[in-house]
Image (cartoon, rainbow, N blue to C red):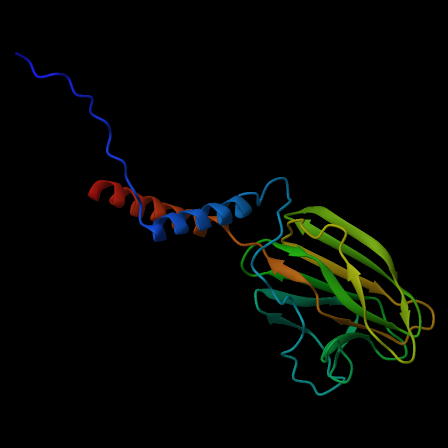
Length: 222
């Protein structure tokens, strides 16, 4: 006589708590980063960046500024007479478009040595009058960002103001900042250029693969 048929149910697998937690965190991080590099837009980066604050300038005050590399970024002077300002900044030091008393049109070119980046803001002080700005962002040979306007003048006691980008999540591979001194302007100080490298999702993909391997081994041992 045959034994009665007994239904075989698959054995449930209970993963260790650390695996479940690691997987949850990974999913949350990937959901943020995998939105990047789509139509030139990204979601806000979760990696903080100090941007360019000129903190490494050695002076002395008034020394010609010819560009420098700070963190991931390289600043190149492509126009004007720029000087180091170790007496005035937000906080000090900063750079200024000079010469003081008769400033010329000043232009800076910024690139990222790691990957694409975003531009969020900059600090400025247009001393003794209004100036104008023309900022252009490029992706390859194509200009994908263009913002122009007025830099409101700063008078005694002088202080910095903040210019916000109207497209802070746009991906760029270079940025051109052009400052045009207005009537009566004696100099334009520039500080805290808010640029940030866009993290690459590829490293997160490797992390995801590692999690899959851990989960696979947990299933095998169960």
